[in-house]
Length: 343
Image 1: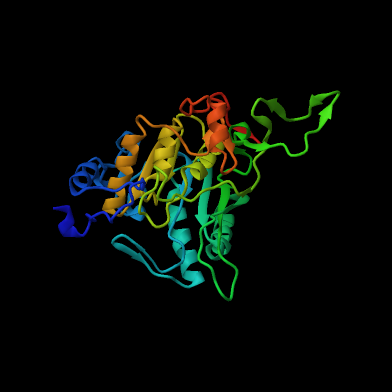
Image 2: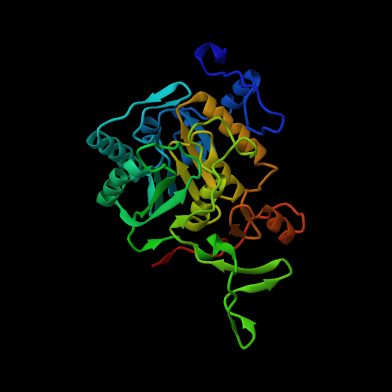
């Protein structure tokens, strides 16, 4: 029985409107049985659109070479942290650099020459990860996003920001679909030429501009209890955040790899956006949660904060519903014909 191995967790008392995803004991067994074990990861077809239950360091060695178009990695930050039954202990900076380099070098073999890389980190590990990436890849940018949540501190600034390093295998040839990740913002001071809007549009719901994406993101909501994507995973990233990375740096049908997939966000978003995925996770309960979320994505392709083919500012749900006339979110097709190109 799974609960005898410490996997099954009895769900906590939930408020009536709490939409956090949890598993019954029966569900845990069913969904875990759908995961792939490392011994069956011999060919690309064995692992395509799969969550692999196993240690990332061992599983990566089983993957075929040159098969991944986009790497999204959210490794453990250099903190003392409990992930269900797995504990991560803080290391020295030098040890964490060695840890980071060890998994990155293993993954390098499976990346295509045109692949892009995104690595999530906090402000402390950002200094380390950026330096390691620069040794082995071409660093293109550093994204900083506002988490909103964060504990206050009496003798320091509240920590409410995280970084994502953007790197590529090739310095020039990689995918970046800028039109697929534009942000829709309200126009505060409309500018016109000859009486016509300049780079913005008038609508019955107000004046808006679809702006080019920057490397500072303040439009995120960290998953919380009333969001249908929320799980009890302690470091879950928003689907909206992952959607930006996937839309920008891959095309439909491309392969996305997440070696620390947790409760499955990268795999779920890849599926919703028409990409293939490989997710690796060592915790059984998180693997099962990922499978449950993937099953839901068969019928629900909505990504909160992304509709009408653009990303929206926070707290604009009513406007999004007006633009979509109450219809469910339809995925953007803008990236279908966007090919890899040199920068």
